[in-house]
Amino acid sequence: MPRKYEQTTRRTMLKGCAATAVGIGALSGTGVAQDGGNRNPRLELVGHTTLGAPDGNITNMDVREDLGLAATGSFVNADTEVHIADVSDLENPEHVTTTSVGVGYVNDVFFHPTEPWIFTANEGGPDAGWSILDVDDPEEPELYGPFDVEGGAGVHTIIAFGEDHVIVSGTGRGIVIYDVTDPENPIEVGDFQVAHEGHSVSAMSPDDPGHTHPSGYVHDTQVRGDYVYLANWDHGLYILDLSDPASPQVAASFDYQEEEADVPLRNAHHAFPHPEDDICLVGEEVGSGDPGYKHVIEFDLDTGETERLSSFRPSQGSAQQPTGQQGFWWTGHFSDWGVGDQQDVLFSGDYKAGVQTFDLSDLANPERIDQYMTTDGADEVRQADPARSIDAIPMVWGANTKDSEYVYVSDANTGLFVFTLEGY
Picture 1: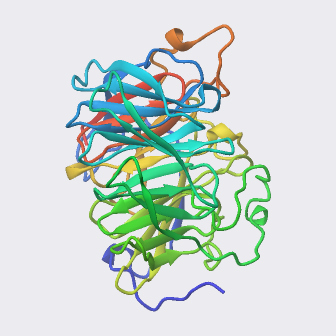
Picture 2: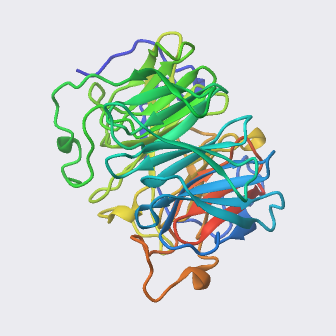
C-alpha cells in the first residue's frame, strides 16, 4: 500500500496541488523569459579538451579547482584508465596524463576534499573494486590498491564522505563505507542495503527487460552534510543519517515499492539533493521503451516524510526527438544543481541529448532553458575503426558543478568541457 501523509508540503505554492507530470517540449531560439523580464539563459563554452583522443570511452568526471585538476574514468574497452587534466586555465584545459588503476574499467572518479587523492570505482572482472590515486605529482600518480569489496562485486560509483571516509555503491551489497585515513590500508566500517522483499525487478520495467539490477542495488550515492542520498534502483530514494558511519540510519525514503504515482517509477539512477532546500532530484535510466522521468521529491528529515512534487521528461536529441519509444542512449544520465543565484537550475548530462539545463524555481512546472550538443572535437576523436563500445556523438556522461560557478561535463567521446550559464 502507498504511504499516506497528512502533512501538507511546506511549499505554499504547491499546497493542495497533486504532483504533476510535465512533458517539456522543444527549445525556443530565445530561451525562457522569467519574471516578466528579457532573460536569455544560455550555456557558454569556456574551454574543452579531447583528453588526447584516447581509445575507448570516457566516463564520469570530477574536479578540484583548488588543485587545478580534473579527472575522468574510462568505459569497458579502455579498461583500467584514468585521464587527468590541468584545468588551472579553464579556457585552455590540457590533458596531463593517462594512468592505470590496475583492474576493471573505471565508471566513476571522485576527489578527496583536502588530500590530493582521486578515488576510482573499478567495475568488471572478478577482482574489481576500487582504488586511490595520489596526484600530488599529477604527471606521475601513485596508486594505492586496488581494493576489493568483501562479499561484493565491482564498484559502480564512489564518493568521499568527509575527510576520513569513502562510500562505494553498486557492489551487490548496497553501499559499503570505508575509513581511508590510511590510504594504503582502508578499513571497512559499515554498510547498508534495503531488505529484499521478493518482488520482481524486471516487472518494474517490462519494456526494458535487459536493463535490470538485483533488488536492493544502489546505483549512486550523493552527500549533503551528515546525510547521504541513495539512488536505490527499484527502491527509489533512500536518505541515510551517516553521522555515525558505522551505523547508517534511514532518515527518509521514497520507496518505489510503497508509492503510487501517475507516472511510472523505474530505475532510480541518481539522487542529487538541492544545495539548500529539502528537495532531491531523482533521475531514471531506462534503456528502452518508454523514456524515464526526472522526479522532484520533497523530504522532511525530522519526520521522515517524503512527497513527489513533479515529474518531467524533455524531448531528446539534437533533432528534438519526441518523447516516446527510445533506444538506450536516449535516456538521462548524471545531473547536478547550480550554485548561488543559479541553485534552482539543474544541469543534466543526457547522453545523446547533450547537456541540458532546466529551471526548477517553480517546482510544479520545470522549464528547459538551454541545450548544448558536445560535438566539439569530433573530427579529432573519430577513427576508422574506433576502439570504443559507444561511437555516438554527442554522448554526455554527466554534468558537475562542484559548488562552482562553472559547469564541468564529460562526453564519452569528445572529452572534457567547461561551461558557464549566462543570462539567467
